Amino acid sequence: MRLAALLSAAIISAGLAGCKASSPSKLETMTVTFAEHHIFVGSVKQKNPLPATTENWADGKDAFSHYCVACHGMDGQNTGVPFVDRVSPPVPSLASEDVQRYTDGQLKWILDNGIRPSGMPGSKGILSDDELWSIVIFLRRLPPAGSQGVPEMYTH
Ligand code: HEC
Image (cartoon, rainbow, N blue to C red; front, side, top):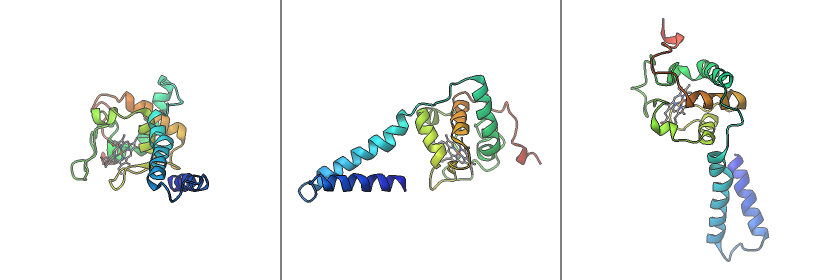
């Protein structure tokens, strides 16, 4: 939605600047560059506004334990989640290098938007920005695998 609005704004202003029919490829390049800078690269470079304090980490752990544990386990490493191997794509360990390679901004973007069409839901509007940024802090220092037990929903 927002992307579409930004892109059409870019196209309209390019049209007004008078380069419409003459150079569609230039417009295309400009639009893609605009999108990269304002959307993708923006979230790559976005810094976590919360400092990585023990308190923010604990808040992140708390928010994670309400909403994310059903699929990722208490430790973010799938401990005790019964269906991890049966969904496709499988639920990854959040401690894995593939996940840890994301920047803070990218992780926040993933949490906001989820990953379609997999089972990973977006949290925008469900969790607050502060909760999501504190979860990012928690993800950077996950507790050792298995140390947090099994999510309560799977214990009975
Ligand atoms: C309904 C199950 C479910 C819930 C709830 C869920 N996730 Fe996920 N998550 C998944 C699945 C499935 C994947 C794998 C997606 C893929 O690889 O396409 C995933 C992937 C991820 C990834 C890695 C993305 C990547 O590109 O490798 C992160 C980070 C993540 N989840 C964090 C969270 C956080 C934090 C929460 C809570 C705010 C959460 N998830 C809630 C199912 C879930």
